[in-house]
Structures are given as C-alpha cells and as structure tokens.
Length: 319
Image (spheres, rainbow, N blue to C red):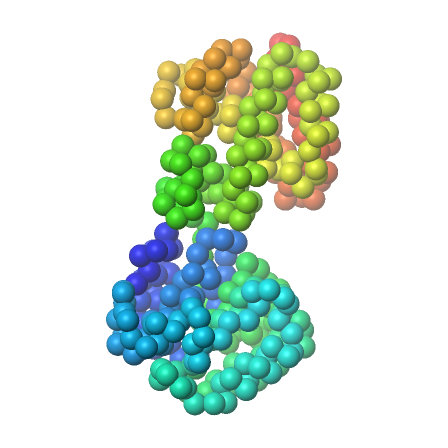
C-alpha cells in the first residue's frame, strides 16, 4: 500500500493496521520535516479509505479511477493559499452531505500550519463532533503552530527525517537524479535541516562552490577566502558550511586510503585536492567549522560566525 513511500516504517505499519481494521474515522495529524512523504502518505491512505474494493494496489474501481481528479467524496485544501474560515466552511458543507461514490468522505488539510486562528477555531467544531464515516488528515511541518485543542483531538503520526539510503532512493528512483548526484543530495537531506527535495539543483551548486572554496582555502590566502564567503546570502551560509564540512570529510577519507566517499562523482578532483592537507589539519578544521553549525540554533549571525571560525582554522594551519 505504501510501496512508493520510502522510510517511515513504524508510521506505515501503524496506518496499515488501522486501514486493515477499517478504523479511519476521525482526525489524523501527520507532522515532520518538509518533503519527506507526509502528503503522499495522506493521499495514499485517503485513496484506500475511499476504495470500493479495499484493494491496496492497482485497483480500477470507480473510486480509485476518480481519485486524483474530481472525486466527489475527497477534498484537499491548503496546497496553494493559507487555510481561511471560508475553506473550513466549505469543508463543513462537504461533510454535511452523504458520500456519493464511496462509503465515507475524506479531507486533507495540507500545510495545516498556515491555518488562520479563526479557521482553526471553526475547524474545532468539526473535530469535537466528527460525523460518522469522515476522515480528516492534517499535514504540517510545524505542529506547534496549530491550536493545542486541535492537536489533542487528532491521532498523531510523527514523520522523521529520511535515512541517507532512503533519501538517496527518492532522489534517484523518483526524482531522476543519477546515482552519484543522489548520494550527495541524500546525505544533505539526511544530515542537515534543509529541504533538499524541493530545490535539489541548488544544493548541487552549493556543493560545487564548496569545493572551489576549499581549493582557495588550501592556498592559505585568508583575504580571498573571507571575500568568497561574502558572495553568499545569509540564508545560504548554513547549507554552504555543511557542504564545506562534507568536502573536508571526504578529503579525510581519501587521505586514510578509503574509497567510500559521498562525492563519488568528483573522486578524481577530490583525490588531487586533498593532498594539500594533513589528516590532523582536516580533523581540526572540521571540528572548528562544526561550531558554526551550532550557532545556527542560537540565532547568531552565521556569516560572522563562519568568518570567525575560518580565522581560527587559518591559525591552526600556521602551527
């Protein structure tokens, strides 16, 4: 049933049990990082809940054929604009009418954190006294922005970040990146807090820029190195630091004579570039630059912090 969703084994097992028992009446909250399968899981569950044959895969019943186009018993709001009172009124009207094709009605509130306070209070009326044979799925990246009273009335399902392997498979098998690129992006998706899946090409660009930056850094030119940092918007620094640390970690791996590096598509360039460092220098610099990542959680100016840690790194290289 969830064969197209990578990762989230416990969530899928729990949902499968509910589905097999026909226990999908009520409200369900799917929360977790962006672009990791929450919406897809909600849609697959909705499709199965509406299926006339209760068939998990490749069903051709009237309901399954209509799903994804104009299904009279399915509604999704929140994919384009904020969820307003008018949207909740449409949901209330929708649930007040008996199902037309299936034996229940299903609503997905995507980006539920965008719901206005007024809309949230209106939705509570439906959650407090849900009609029979109505399933409501709230999908959000930030459950803390929902009213506590809404959360308390939902069965909650936490979606955690994908493993490197699962993220790589999504990028390779679903989004069409070649395996080498998918491995790099999969590492970024798993090990950092950024939403790689919505703009994967941008992060490949940052990876290449990080390699150029480390090459400049290797020349021990502190002025040129600091000037390079000024090219980046403050919102990009955290990702760029991740990429620099990734490049240096691969350098370290190659210096130790190991083959399994993340940036396998740049192996030849990496093998040449790593010769400008010793393993002790790389370990020290990785440790110093990792302090910049910690500052991301303290609302400290990352550009200033990064430059400060670069100066410390240069000091280490002079010893």
